[in-house]
Image (cartoon, rainbow, N blue to C red; front, side):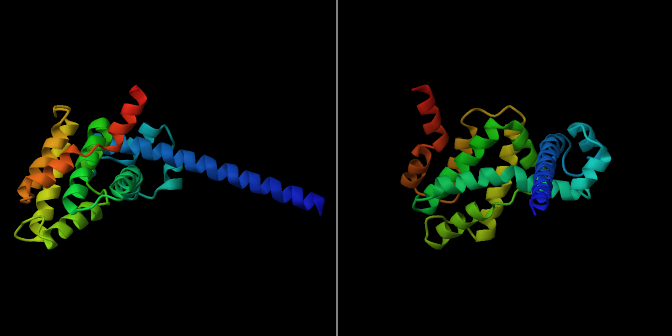
Length: 217
């Protein structure tokens, strides 16, 4: 019985080590894919591009992903999940669609300006998910009369068209440091948001700013 237990424990250990190694390899592929897609877009890359960037064999690639399209989807989910979750957490407790939308956009653009590769990836690929956050706040604002637009579809298309163009500009490295804040303010103005609500959204201190303040103190 003791020998059987020892054998089973060794088998469990090997299984765990194998899973951890596989997870590290997958993360390595995703990190490499982020840069490849950011630089080449979603359609141009071939499997060999990812194999070379990650320093792996084609066999190892196929152990984790069946195609470039599958890798693209996985990279999109992997690279945006943390950002979307952190923004959602930062918006918790904030009342009013204008404040939530304004702060959320400012946080999103702050992430883009601090991480150029991520920014270019999102701008070129745009399979980011998480669009339910701003879409929800836009719909809420239209329903309550805080925002004005011909329709929710028009307001949404204006938002995501502006975000895509803003990310392309930020990714070029030519955007001013306050570019994201300016884009956020302009979009709120385009929705007919009153000046008081816009001012509150622009003045609200972001979590990143609070962390930097603690670090410098």
